[in-house]
Amino acid sequence: MNSAVLPQRIRTRLRRRHAAEKRFRCYGVVALCFALAFLFVLLATIIINGAGVLIHKRMLFEVVVSEHHGDRYGAMIKDSWKAQFPEVTERRQRRALYGLISRDAEFLLRERLADVPVPDNGIVVLSVPFSSDAGEFLETDPDKRDSFSKRLSTEQRGWLERIEAGGKVETVFNSDFFLNADSREPEVAGILGALIGSMLTMCVTFLFSFPVGVMAAVYLEEFAAKGRLFRFIEVNINNLAAVPSIVFGLLGLAVFIGLFGVPRSTPLVGGLVLGLMTLPTIIIATRAALQAVPSSLRYAALALGATPMQAVLHQGLPSAMPGIFTGAIIGMAQALGETAPLLMIGMVAFVADIPDGFTSASTALPVQVFLWADSPERGFVEKTSAAILVLLAFLAVMNSAAIYLRKKFELKW
Image (cartoon, rainbow, N blue to C red):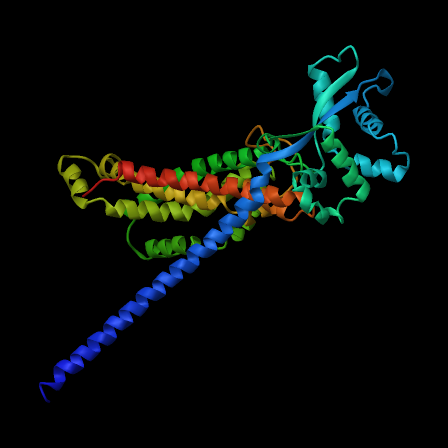
C-alpha cells in the first residue's frame, strides 16, 4: 500500500469520527433543550393558572340582624343582599342575585355573631367572598370582561360593576386556600385538610416501612444464607419495586381493610399501603449502602472481639446510615405523589373536615388534585394548579432533605 495514501485515509476517518462526535453532542444538546423547554412550559402553565389563588376579591357586606329571623342566618344574608338592589323583584332575578355571593356567607355570619355581640344599630359588617364566577369576573381586566357573557348575565355583570363602583370590593390575600379544608364551593375550598392528611399518612409510612425495611435489608445482606431461597427473595424484592402502585392498593384493600378491619379513608390505612409500596425501595437502598461500607471495618471489629451482630450494629449500620436515609426519603417522596393506591382504599371521598388523628377520615394532596381536576366548576382550575404547586414544593423539600443528609453524613473511604 502506498505510504502517501495511508495518512490521507487516516485523516479522512478521523474527520468522519470527529464529525460523528460533534453530531452526537448536538443531538444531546437538542434533546436536553427539548426536555427543559417542556419542563418550562409545564411549570409556567401551572404557575400562571395557580397564581390567582393567592389573592381574591371579597365584598364588605352589611348584614341587618333582626330578631324575627331567629337563627336563620341564610335569610338574614339574603334579605340584606336583596335590600341593596330594590329594583330586583322577580324570582328569577333574586336567584341570579343570590348566586353572586358565596353560600359560605351564612356560616361566616354565624361565626361572627358567636364571637362578637350585635351592635346597637343591628348592622354587622362582614368580608364575604364572591361566588367563583363573580370573583373571577371582578379580577379580570374591565376590557376583557366580555368573555363572561356566557357565564354571567348582563344583569349580574351590571350588579357587580355597581358594587365595584361603590367601593365595597376589596382585594385580600386568600388565606382560605391555606386554612380551609375541601368544599363544594370553589371560592372557599382549601388544602389544609389534604395537607395534614398527607403529613399523617407519611408519618405512618415512615414508622412502618423504615424499621421493617432496614431490618430486612440487614438480615439479607449480613446474615442470610446465600442459597436458592435467598436468590428467590432477592429477585422478588427487585420485582416488587416495579409493580404498579394500584396493586398495592388492592393488597391493602384485601388485607388491612378486609382482613384486619382498619378504617377506610384514614391516614392509618393509607400509610400502611404506601409503606408496603416503599418497602422494596428502602430494602434495595439499604443493601446498597451496606455493600458500600468497607469490609475492613467489620473485620477490625470482629478481630477486637465483637460479635457479628455488634459489628453490624456498631460499625456497618451507622456508616451506611446516610445512604439509608437518602433512599428512605426518596422512597417516601415517591409515595407522597401516588394516587392510585389511595383511591382503592377510599381516600377519594369528599372530606370537609380537617383530620385530627390517624383514624380520622381524610384525603391526601394527590387525591385532592384529582378531585378538583375532575370537578366541572371553572373555579377549581386554579385551585388544582395551586395544589400541584404545593405538592411540588412538598416533594422538593423532601428531596432537598435527602441531598442534605447525604452531603452532611457522607463518609469518604
